[in-house]
Length: 534
Image 1 (cartoon, helix red, strand yellow):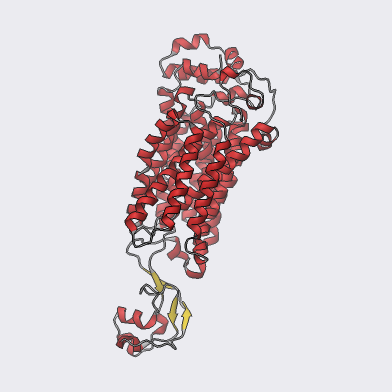
Image 2 (tube, one colour):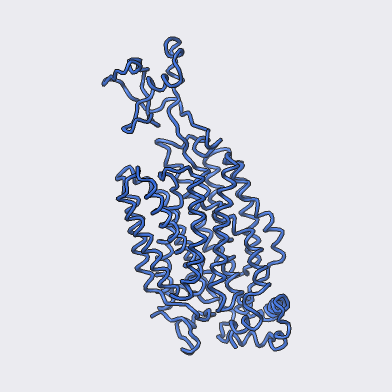
């Protein structure tokens, strides 16, 4: 009897698993709130140079606000006032419709004036992250994802060494602490450092929670459970939209979106440890304790009589002693090395394109709250479609199709002018939905690809590569200054290339979760449907 058979005996998706998912939902809904927070926290409101220095004690003081802007700020090609330039001296001839070709234009001399009608306060208005400093605004998202990139392998290694449950509590406490410290930052540098550590901590929640959930589900319910878990992201997306709509100050918004972690900390006491991990560590007594609790909760107490600690040990019959696994083990042997390289490339492409689309909610002719709400709402029907597709078509084909579809949508929007905002929005929403589908699939797919003894290391490694893509993705938008369509072309190329690489991964539909690296390198028998790199 294999461990998956044991789970099926005691109901691989019953009340026990539902309780586990609901407890973890409290923390997981904060992930999209932080990962996409820059859409609101770093929003750039309309702005122009502060023209108070042009006050001359004469005519200028008697002008209306509109007239002051007319004589002080040059206009762009579309007729809007310049955001980064002003006249050195008031051009009073502009009042009569004359235009002086000799007007001397300079950069803003005394800061900027911002439109606070949409946002009371953002990072941009707090530290003037516009014009020559606009790169610092994009860098806040990059710094956060660098933190996630560092935290993913760190928490992956520690949770494989010390267990899922204990490291989850560490992730909860540190995420909440650093998020609150970020909200009270007194300078841009302090804020950036706190966001780095917040990203590191949230990475722990991201990779440990999904592994713990999947490890408690039987084969026949794994697809369903994976899609159900991904709905946490959709709920968090809606939550972020609502919170951002009612809380327009970035400091308060940071605290509010982190508040569900308080409930998660209190609910942590009811979380079980992974029985798979305990067995991989040869702790059969503790594993049997949780298996018995699962059976009792799922009304399968009669089944536990035939399941003993020795039975559980025999369900994972590869002897590994007390070997400590690290990320290096992902590259020691041929099959798992190929798996690690290919899955890393796919993860990079998924995250790179997802955040390229998700962190660019302007330019569609809609306000940011409505755009975010539409992007979030399309996820629900897409995830339902993903569930049925994964069961019928399989993981590999679905991942390939999703990524290639994202590339097609991005390619189409390159040729749609900005004045046709309805078409651009429809295509962008379709691209966003396919991008979300690729993320939903790859999370489930990855947990099925890696053996239990290195699953957290595998998730940590792939999450590291994904966050590398996520950290670079916001900066790609700065390439607009080189060529208007270069960012979209870059996102398109990466989506297509990673979709093609996905074809090199093995199919895992209805396959047993591998427990040890030997299950991938030397499958024990073909009938057990162990995964083998083709």
